Image 1 (tube, rainbow over the protein chains, first blue to last red):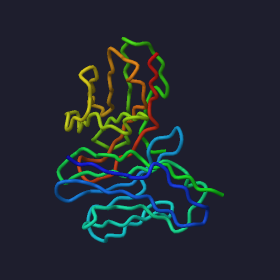
Image 2: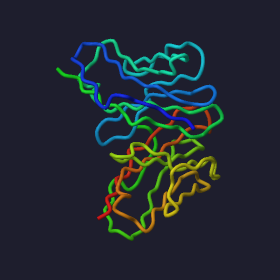
Image 3: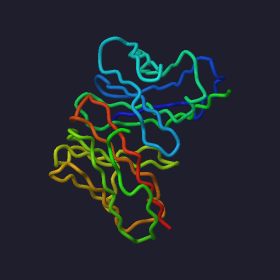
Image 4: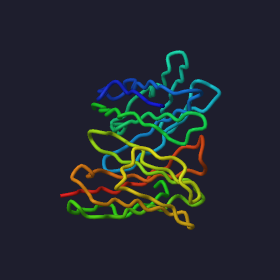
Length: 113
Length: 113
């Protein structure tokens, strides 16, 4: 079975500071990893994905994520957080050959002005 | 705007009733996914269709059923509704079944009284 763990319920960060949202995964075989963001009363929006290749993936709105196979992690990062980055962030994993995308429970990010 | 359309946006009904949620995928997308989002369970995968055929099944109750029609729109039918079925139901679509990211609709919020 595939699963994702997002250990922190909420991440608080001051505006302008680096933002990190943690994610670890469990999957058989090669993982396909995704980050999504959800704003209040909206659907999930795709941020970035790792399929293969370079371990550092760049995505939308200045976000990036680093795939670490030995630590089974895929942490989301942004060098300088904005107040508008305050939202719910989901990490997701899919195993090769599996159609099911499994989501973590989500992390609420609060950027303090 | 993801291009995925869900109706209705809000639905209030009573226990024991039956409702149908509708989803129109992005133009050209063959895969449709249904997810349930609740505060205690997070995002739960329900079912996936690809070009009219069921491809994967998740934590979908027997009281729930879905189908994808020849024009690729999908419907999720929820019957014998219980209070615990109150949740946000998301539809997502992707080009094919595989490594591609999912594009989510805005969701249908179901309240069972």
